Image 1 (cartoon, rainbow, N blue to C red):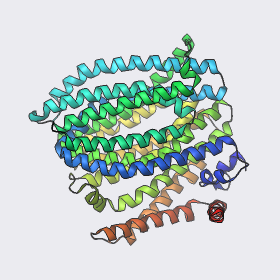
Image 2 (image 1 turned 30 degrees about the vertical axis):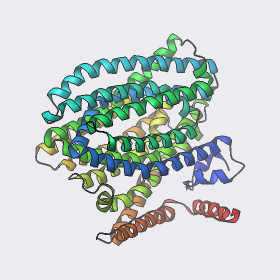
Image 3 (image 1 turned 45 degrees about the vertical axis):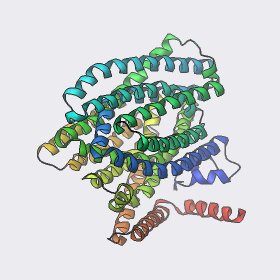
Length: 531
């Protein structure tokens, strides 16, 4: 089987990621991609169960108002996260690129450059957060005066947590570039166990629960920095012995990161400003509702992110090696696979949101259901863009892309503000998000097509976007049609399982071509024969 099995005239091979494990004639890179994906999925299955439990305990322990304070105060520092995301993109791109070329000296120089720049960024974030950010927290946010002291404690912990996260980025980038996803699997499990410990200590703590929760979160982030740094310095030569970077390399790194700043500013500012707009109109209770929705979205998105995290380094490496056809095939595969993976998990959740929230949290803030459903719809649309972004970053020519996408994403804010200003309900502020996310998807592909003419509008529109909309839309309609309204765990399980089976059946029946189904069924048959 050739690399072109990722995509052919007959259609995308959605089950290629599974099939390649069982076929010995495939390349080592493909096997690693499949194994890495499965490792990350196994981790996520464990993480999701624990996360659902810990979230409920934290919400019940802190209360809705304090939970909302934690979400909105962390968001003030989070507005600076676009700097971290931009540098993460630059680090992963340059490290993966040099691994693809095989130049060890340049690889060491890239890592050293990344370390230096992230340290400088940490200092910058500290300065901005302790001046402008601190002023904004104490003068503009809608927080009751009795909780301002606790809010400032949370804010200081959030600053330190963000700085630790920033200086951990170079080590994370090295692990991703080397495709050591087992490390993320183990650390993810460790993180989950730490969350359980935090919940236990939070329940025992005689001190302010909100402050205690923020401090414990800071301690966990500190431990991650030591773990990632220790692992990288032990296993990767570029981390053991640094190389003084050249001036052109620093300029290229800053240029790439600088334009990444522009694009990620749009995303970060949009997300956090939307949260602040909701706070100004409705207070911390609505922030808590959106915070819960974002947490659910994070859990669900990680299923797709597991696949994309394993795929993205190979896209960059293949491009750096001059394998344009292979790169295009992988981008197409990622764009089509990711919504299916996301939809199989999200459609049952969208159908059963109300009872799941009652089972998970008991009492929950008003509008949480609508926020969760809209957030998951946005995530399904948005996950198609990730492989396109990776392909754009691989080229190194991101100026136009970042400017355009920043303008597109920021255009959501005035529309959302207007919706609320004329009396819209809180969740209606996300209606523009759905539309803008779809526009942003096509804006990215148009730019990529202009850079690499080999991409096809017809394939992307007909075989990917419209096919995904049809398949997942049909799955939702049928799931909603057979849904039985009512309460009770048995009915919830029946609705959830039926929705999952329907979605899976629709994906296999209409999302896959005949030869793809044959590959899937042969794989399942071979697995049973082994047993």
